[in-house]
Image 1: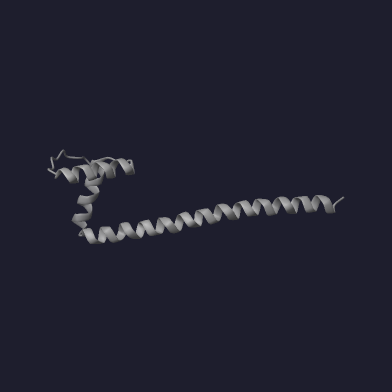
Image 2: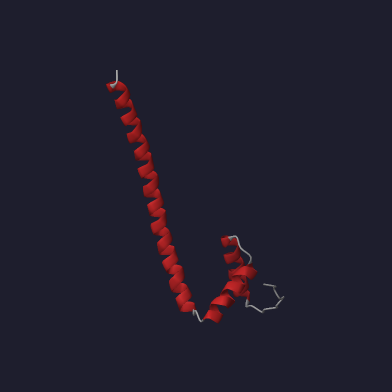
Length: 93
């Protein structure tokens, strides 16, 4: 879809927070503004966005914990398989 240049006046604190959010997410301020407009047009209110953000953060914590457990399990599996290999070698002699 073609983009149309639009001028928007923001309060100084909004501009600063938007720039910080864009920088921390590695995205452009304009992308974040378009997403916010899309959410508003879909009828998503700020409270719902906050709830979604909080749920996303909780989910990320769970995902991070699962990835850590998976890495530990993979390490344990490699150790176990190495032990099995050594046992097989020693029993075949």
